[in-house]
Length: 263
Image (cartoon, rainbow, N blue to C red):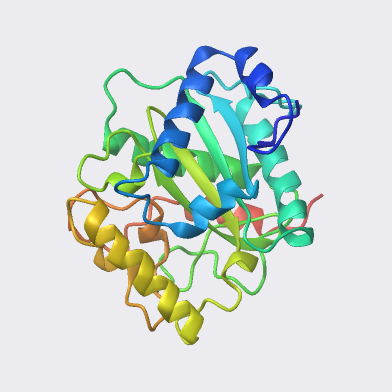
């Protein structure tokens, strides 16, 4: 079994049995949350993606060891390799594919502030290992309202799920920090300016109201416009607190280095 797998892969059970127990536990907890009938997980795209085998998975250990990965520098390099492999599949296969990266082993006392920092540390680490320069069409300074995290030559949408979420249950996928990655192709035809996009957003957000113990966060924007400062969606507060647009944790120096051509 390679470092990237899907729910439709044969031999998945035996693969998970051969891995540390935390990974199998994390995967089963994710599966329970995504397939629980009542209340159903609010993102029907994610539920359908798992059903159809379009959700992909990888794992990275806190000890800098990627499970089953071939990266030479441990966990973060293995995760970078998994992202490159996923990107190729995401642009050549079905449109709506997703990669979920389990980060473990889980903390015995999960803390949202700590997971918030770990999430941004992982993104910064991935950028330092990026083999492609930061796209010239995208701002490198996260203070720019159009900034989005980029990797392998394009912007991605990524968000974090943590067991420390209590009220925002939709951002809790089990005992581990989970990073969820999607290429921009996922959103083709679903922008706020399209009827399909507006309908999809309304549907998901109406389900969020019945699933979470807090209303949909203002950082998600409305259903008719594309939001700015998208980084604030990456790891939402557990309450309705609004993050300052000028306080993105992503270090500008990392993005500036990534913009340079490879030697």
